[in-house]
Length: 237
Image 1: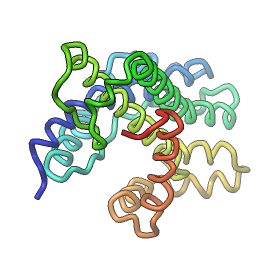
Image 2 (image 1 turned 180 degrees about the vertical axis):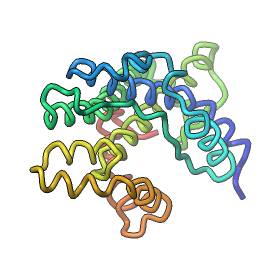
Image 3 (image 1 turned 60 degrees about the horizontal axis):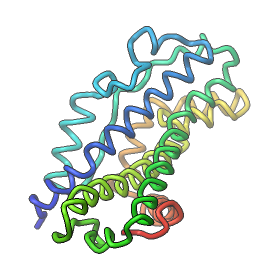
């Protein structure tokens, strides 16, 4: 039976890291597209760190919260940044740069979160005694611990979430960023073949995530996330 109260507590920890991860990911796409010659996103107000500009009411809020609270499964999406590839100065190169900028930003966020996390722990190792192996808050300690431990849990969640976003978005299936990168790297004939997948890409992605028919998510994807988390945090909590 799903622990509804537990999911509420966990949602309070992961909500802000997810919001930051989505906002900076999309803003990075918009910023690099603008630098590469396409002002579309900037003119539409997407070159901003205001999360409201990037949030899709259903895909970013309603669906993820409903799924998470009632199943423990988290899946959602933000409003994609509009890019007119015909405006790019060097089409294939710039397509790769625009697509890769989002996952690269998520990696930098994960790295920054890990550095801050390890800095706090180095300053006061006792803080770890208030965090369970399942990333729960263990009561006790002074008022400083009651403030810093929730922050540490958010930083820990930020590392996991941003690494997950980075790797997930680099799956080489359009319309994910990895698919765009692949289209930009392949010769013209290969690019056209991969581009034809895009109308069906969302359904393929949902199948991979929810059913994992060939074990990519469970046997390859998540283990890689866990390895990277261990390298950045120094330990898994």
